[in-house]
Length: 176
View 1 (tube, rainbow, N blue to C red):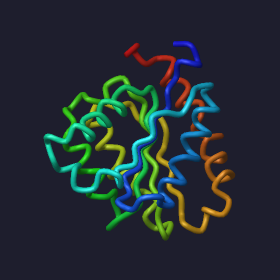
View 2: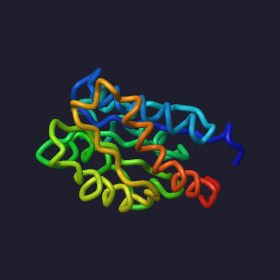
View 3: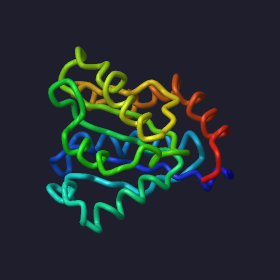
View 4: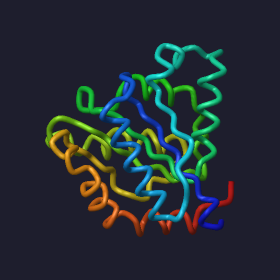
């Protein structure tokens, strides 16, 4: 796969539109795309769907499911609610089959108010992504609200550690 063919999708699981979670997701997507020589797109913000996520006949939600299933790298971002990801994100992923993300390298990202929930991405979000067939080659990124003022540096520091495993996963991924 040529580098310019690498697509980095962004999925935001916050029920609030224009959220801090969306800001984090956009920055992670941008930096990951730059690091792998790819491009960002599509961006799916589940806040735009609201209750339609639970409607099995929603063509818009079905379309977004197809979009995120077709990317090379998927940045999956959620605020931390009750020490885990949101019900909105869970409801969206409940619509997927067990291998719907086969061939996708996923990056779990969570945003929270306190560092004591920092393992939520590893303990809760990673297993969900693996269950759907995604490869999760990096450690999750947990961004504490107090880091938002220097978000670019926070993501860059994480990516300096996790960029190599992500690039290796892309080299070994089967063609979609």
